Image (cartoon, rainbow, N blue to C red; front, top):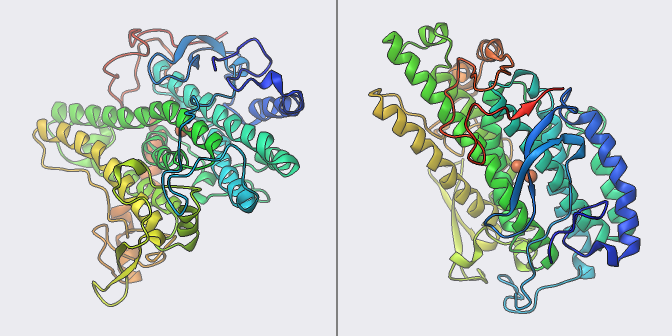
Amino acid sequence: MSMNYQERIPNNVDLGSNRTLQRALEHWQPHFLSWWQNLGPRDFQVADVYLRTATSVDAKGWATYGFVRMPEYRWGIFLADRDPNRKIGFGDSFGRDVWQQVPGEYRAILRRLIVTQGDTEPASVEQQRMLGHTAPSLYDLRNLFQVNVEEGRHLWAMVYLLHAYFGRDGREEAEELLERHSGDADKPRILGTFNEPIRDWLSFFMFTYFTDRDGKFQLKSLAESSFDPLARTCQFMLTEEAHHMFVGDTGINRVVRRTLEVMKELGTEDPETVRQGGAIDLQTVQRYLNFWFSSSLDLFGSEMSSNAASYFANGLKGRPDESNYEDHIALEQTYTLELPVGNGKSEQIPMRNAMNEVTRGSYVRDCDLGVKRWNRLIEKAGYPFRLSLPSTRFRRNIGNWAGIPTDTAGHPIGAQEFAARQTEWLPTESDQAFILSLMHGVYQPGWMAAWIAPPDRGINNNPVEYEYVRFQ
Ligand SMILES: [Fe+2]
Ligand SMILES: [Fe+2]
């Protein structure tokens, strides 16, 4: 189905053929737009931004680029093409036909999964809404807004499923997705990480690298779902999501590159001298990394989870890249879980109960690829410092290691030692004050804040100096 941009709500689901659904979504649309005006990017709603808009769901050549005012962005409903032969890929019903409708017995659980995913999308827009004021360049400002409008579209993706397949409950949930707000004392967003405001661009790059990557893995799990419309929705979201992680990956890369330049110029490895040179010392980068990585790990849930087991058994949520596994039933296998008690003691648990941990493991390996790339820059510059992911046991709030103080290598330590060494491992107030002191908007085309190197290339073959955002 090709994308229809003629209708009020762009779509490739032949929305016009279902008048009731179309009307319901057209009724939700102004609520979405007023949410965007009130809680979307602050103060840039009349700027012309060089944005990409989806024009097909093929992985190649799926987007067009042009100047758009954000409130006029064509948010729409786009699902990957349907494969009429698609079969259930895992769990007890492996090999049977996928579902085009929601089976009654899974209605409540599927709705919950969709709402939880949907809630993160507008949450991140809310978290990032002040960042436009301090963008290090027009290139970065444009990338921020691209991420924001696409998170808005991801909300549309989930709201479509709620409206189309969950009746009145779904419509109510769609309203509530606009009523909860990040950090709101009465109606916060569902997941903890999505209630932390993102005040600076180092955090933004860490968020897009680590937290959007959690999104990638959640979407990959849902893209395996037997509920075919959900799987197809998530497949296309992943295409957009890739850019968000690119922003994080290259953002951190550019921070590191700039720091190395300043270290060379000043002939120093001393963090304080690097800061005086206007760059972010690598130790601070590591502390921000520790914070965002550990907080994103919690989003995968407990190591041992009966919910995860039943999602898998019932074919609701699979493992990312399920086709890479040999055994799609996973009933006979076990998983070895290391326990926080008894010094190196471990436990065998049924594989299905360990699905959160399996997914978290794939996520950690994916996170490490970027760390290796950043380290190659440091190594090439001739410095011994290396960035690293802390242990998955470090600073956890969910699962077996929740509340158990460890060092960054994952060795249990006393609470007092943790408190004493925290400033070594996590951003301190003075780190945060320093990072904030660097944050000033740089809006001259081609100019770059002093704490970050320019990107290797611009967007869509345009030069880095291109005027990606035009103010009125
Ligand atoms: Fe998203
Ligand atoms: Fe994202």
